[in-house]
Length: 100
Image 1 (cartoon, rainbow, N blue to C red):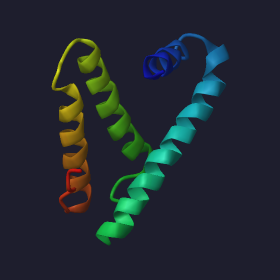
Image 2: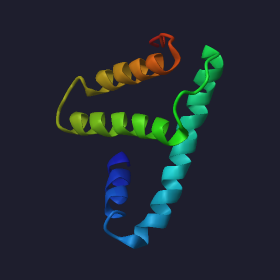
Image 3: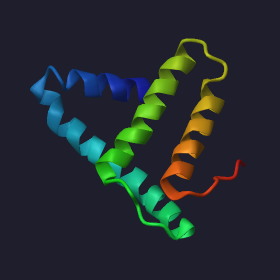
Image 4: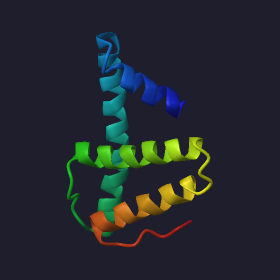
């Protein structure tokens, strides 16, 4: 599913017919990330230091990077994604995110 999303998003760079749908899905995903990050903000009692679009780009970029590593056979990709996401949240709010 994620590979299909990234493929569709890439195709939208070349085919205008995909752009409106990709923009709508992208906006929905950005809203999801921002809702989660606002909750972290509340729990940390710290303001969001980045705009919604930057927050989304940060976590989407991490996810895409580690998805490619996972698909390329990197057995550490999932744990590395978890660690880097925790580090990003820690850096944004100055609090350590506890592992499950």
